[in-house]
Length: 372
Image 1: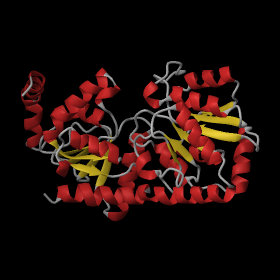
Image 2: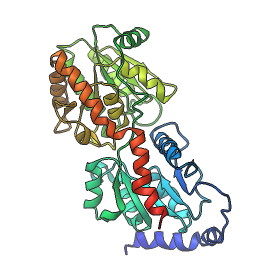
Image 3: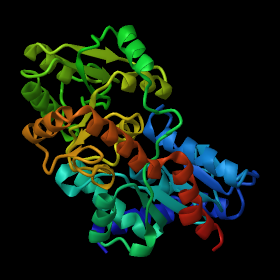
């Protein structure tokens, strides 16, 4: 046992002892669902995953799953943390009368010292975990290579609402562009993920999300194509500044709800995922469900869903030059082949529809643990 691990164990066992004894004695007396999914107090991916999983299982097994932002008083429950970061913040303070499940979607030691330390702390906590859920084969194999037992790892895709995100009709596409002031003849490229540091203007790039690669790719495309870039979300200042310096027009929309993204996808001819590390991302699945061709770096779920040239464009490395080359290849496809690619992309992403993802959480994770 390392010194760090020993100190963590001492703190968990003795500093938290009064709470543990109280929890074990029945301090949590409220009646409620046996499964509690822990989400953050923010309207973003972790909340959406927890709420969708709850809603889908509610249709299968009413009263089974609740979502919570305050897990500290839970005891004798199956507690699913929506991210490994939340688990490390809360888990040490919680009763071992619970069974713990954690979603681990992305991260590797090469991502930097802070991430590397976090991963080591997470791996130290694995003995307390009943299951670890991850969305991509790439991350699944990474966990196994780190020594996580095969029996604890479950791969379930990050979900998408395929009823909400659907290919637009020609009329819907035209109306969406008109409302956002985008010329009909423009080649509209979308990038909807936060790629700046912090929650302000985002002038400092979050390089793990690849905003520099995005700008590099667009710079290579703009000479031959009438490119307009569609951006959403906060902290996009670095990308906006780069587009302005290149003279590339863009539209930046701050959405009020997740459903507002639908219209944004309706404007697109192409969506780019330029990240150096991902768990999904959600934009990948939402674009494919919307019938938008995607060019992605080989991260997260992209290698699971994209067959290069068949369901999208998959770069073999994180390179702006390669992203641009893949984008040019898709744009140059004859209309009949492009229409076929759009249909195949939507068919491929149906494995991540929330109805499938919710059922898999029940059948592969919650039901087996509740039967123990």
